[in-house]
Image (cartoon, rainbow, N blue to C red; front, side, top):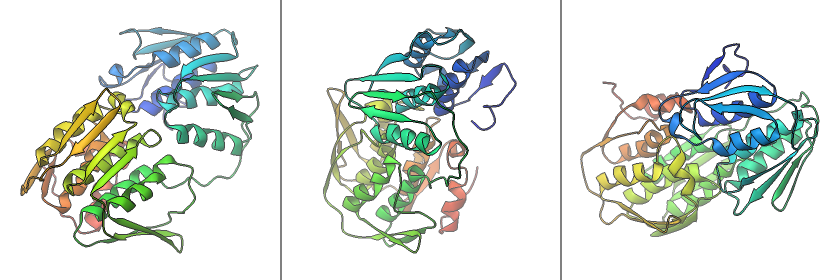
Length: 355
């Protein structure tokens, strides 16, 4: 994102970064920059039609270069604002909605975004509103309608929060270890991120959390035998939580995993395949309800894990190394969000060999 946002290049290659694809598509479209947006083969399978349709309605001229509804796309021009109102499903990736929200202040008449149906990933939308307000933008959200008013972003001092998605993996290490105390430095109790829900989830799975002197200290506690959880507001935590359930023989019933189908990979299918290797079964009912049935975890001495070009598959399953030797195929995928992950594992005593 940082590299590409000011790039003079005509072709913008986001590689496998979905957030960058969606945010920069909106940014380039409403600022009138002529760009080709492209990425990896997997990125070209990730839908973008809802965002493109909304931007076209606002006034952008965008055409598909390959498959209709998917990247690669060419942003050709912006002819001025044609409409100040768009309608988009509320249960899609919040990145579409955030992209439109951040474009809104630049439009002469602002932008009204109507959300249809159930709203997913609500904390991400709330986080976008909170951050925009801190930088001087007026945004209101009433029922199913977000209104973004024309204004200019103002410079301000802001401290970026620690990444709770990344922090979640250390909860998993504690949950699976026989003994463990891990300190996450400079992690504050207040956070806008929905993935802070990992504290409540892992409290049920055997991890006690304590904020002390500006740090977060994780330690062992008793765990429940079953977990019920709605991941609608924190879908990125699924790849942390389900492997812990599988490894600890904790049954689970889950909702809110629909968006996992269109992430870096089909994360539901990937979890089904990888957790089957330790004896767990993930079943799906009606496309909106899932169960995990660990049975008896296989007591293997080693495990080969495929990562499916997905950083969260690697980091979510890495804590299984507390129980057995793990071979991680394509470990470089962590570079997308947490490039020092393997070094941090080494720092707490894991032996890691590259091959």
